[in-house]
Amino acid sequence: MNLNEIDRSKIRSVIESQLQAFQRDDAKGAFEFASLGIQETFGTPENFIEMVRVSYPSVYRPRSVLFEELTQLQGMPAQPVLLLGKTGVPVRALYVMEHHDQQWKINGCYLVPIEKRNL
Image (tube, rainbow, N blue to C red; front, side, top):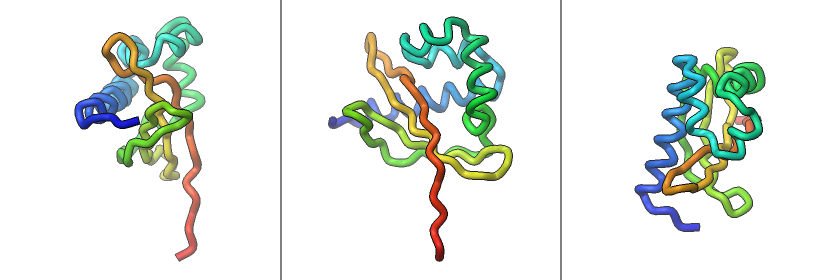
């Protein structure tokens, strides 16, 4: 899959916008960046933001955010993002993206522990 720089920029913007909505506790705003499938699964913005708050604290309130090189997961664009949570433990969030009606939406977020390397 070859995505142009415009698509890469739009994907990053969607993720940044959702992270900003979480910071403001803007459930409706954060929900709008989720794919239709995610919206159907959670039903309401309030259900969605509560799930993120409880299950994804590093996504809900990151202390720092660093975007890595866009990749693919099962043929879909996936944006890895390094997050530093409140506890100071880094985690990699892998955002799977979906293109629908001329817009990029987040179709899932998977947290992957970062392996410590012996130096």
